[in-house]
Image (cartoon, rainbow, N blue to C red; front, side, top):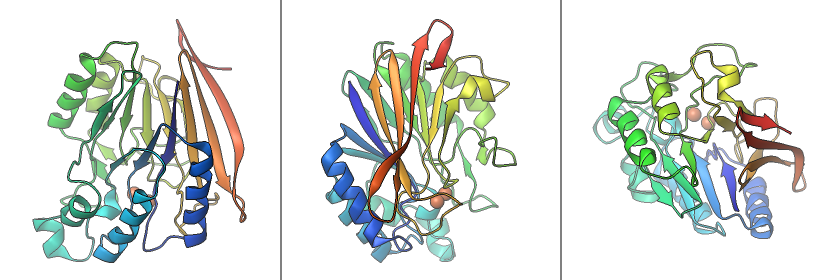
Length: 269
Ligand SMILES: [Fe+2]
Ligand SMILES: [Fe+2]
């Protein structure tokens, strides 16, 4: 069994210090096996913002794995944006933009979808090399290992959020996700929590793949939802997703969903 605390959209520089302290206190009690942060660690890619994010990461009570989001590259400093977009992220957070870990029970791959040369700064993209990397990484890992892919931009726009996917070339990547046996997709960006089965929600997908989007864990930029994170328990053939939300006084579980893997794919039980 493994437990993952899935945090997202921390937005240090525009975050709530009380909430950040409460998350650390909650994680210290719940002791996840791994913390995943699905992008937008900072608000403006400034050194002071990244410094605060690094201090937060240093206090996590578990190993962590992070990917960058669109806010982690400079928006207004165009020289930095176009010449060294990930300079501060690499320096303060991690030099590895596509991190990977495999402990024999779970294999987790992060893929960087943030792009400096995109017309709409908020959107993201996945490229052919990254799709190849996903396939090459997961194809060789046995199906007994639970395979998790982390991106900032989701492959699927949640039904309640109108509009197309914000992830360029997502359609190109979907067959690869199916063929190499990805079990779970983790993402953020919308600042709204969501989970479900990609096969139920996307007409092009046949393989049952769980998806979980985390809302913003510590940002003050809320989208009609409280700050929260997902606490995911992986105990094959079951997976549970708990939404731990900020009440103004601490974090509590506001939703707890269970899925089990059957011959027909993921079943919500
Ligand atoms: Fe965000
Ligand atoms: Fe974002």
